[in-house]
Length: 293
Image (cartoon, rainbow, N blue to C red):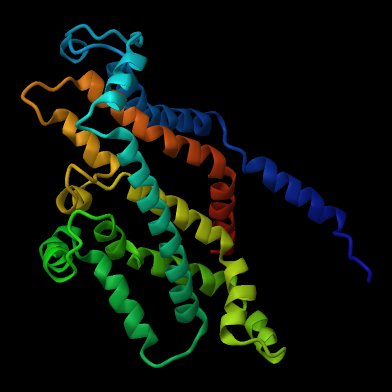
């Protein structure tokens, strides 16, 4: 098998294009401002969380952190009303199960809408997309009635997991990605070789969807981990997720914000570790999606 070498003018043009695409001074300045703006809330939380109860009320702000962060973090972990480790375990379970189910069902649905021809597919996809415009708060009352009176799941983690098993955004995201990134010829070739529909999806569709699925899993995990509204309604103080448990720190008449923000930072650490581990895959998924789009 012979390979064709790119002509010299093409290589020089490609190198010149890559050089001109590098950001200039203004680009780096803009990125620096954006990064500092994104990191400021985190630093502000650490600033207050490392102080004492009087830090947030001071008129002259000391921009250097105090030395009480470990003490405040220990107060959060050892607070009996919070139940930190149980809430932490509950958040891990809910976020992991929801992320896995959203990726699986969204990829299956996206593959069907993108590559399978069936009657009513376009109308069904439009209906799913339209549900994204409905505010979550409108469905809370019927969802609460269903979970508490019909299924008797109030206070359990299943009441948080089941309504989030698949999302409209996930279906739309995977449909768009597979439509652009998965050639029909690959599916037809698999069918000619005798592969069933499930086998074709497993060996052809799923590998092609891996970059988008990684991004969807990461964003779903973060959204589920930080979700407060629905878990606060359906769960009780005996079986909370981490955001619900941390809200118990400010249920008294006096709120010590240094302890509250220390707890918020503790809940953020798993997400920072996740972004550090999956950051390369996230950037790869974004770049592949941008190129294919």
